[in-house]
Length: 108
Image (cartoon, rainbow, N blue to C red):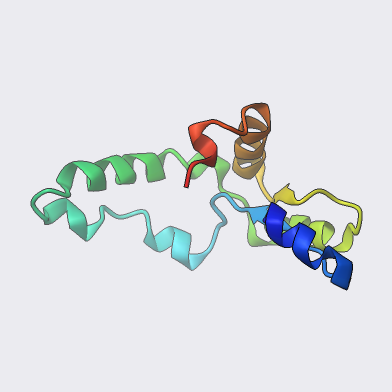
């Protein structure tokens, strides 16, 4: 994002990164079940850990309207930062990254 932003800025193009957390959509609702991988040898532990982590996201679920409002604000703020959060979980992740940008939170 940083490289792209620097590269296209002279062309008048602004780049933003939106860090979405769990948004109350059909896709989120359908992800609440145990993944099929839980029945595949070698993937059981990972699938169960993912499912447990997904269950922990419930307190952070944001309405689509709230997320859209935050995203619109990010798009319309010509002087805004590169990275934007559109919900409380995204804000926590962004704050953690800003506190330690070299940490594994930034690993790819």
